[in-house]
Image 1 (cartoon, rainbow, N blue to C red):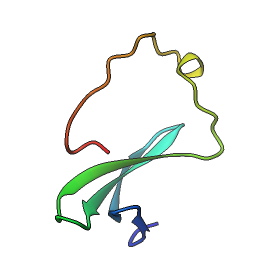
Image 2: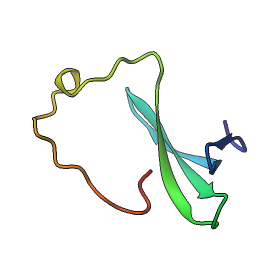
Image 3: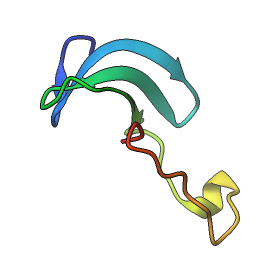
Image 4: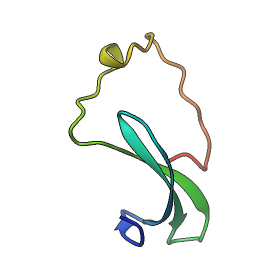
Length: 66
């Protein structure tokens, strides 16, 4: 994955991982901004209920979160 481009984001290095996703440091190829890119594992079906999240869920908003 390192060095590959995902949409407009070039994956630079791993940042962390958990049971449902991996997080990478990536660079926006349009403006060079560094961002955190979270990519869900395909083998894990996701739903708020299965993750134990309350509804409604308050989402974090930031230009660095893709």
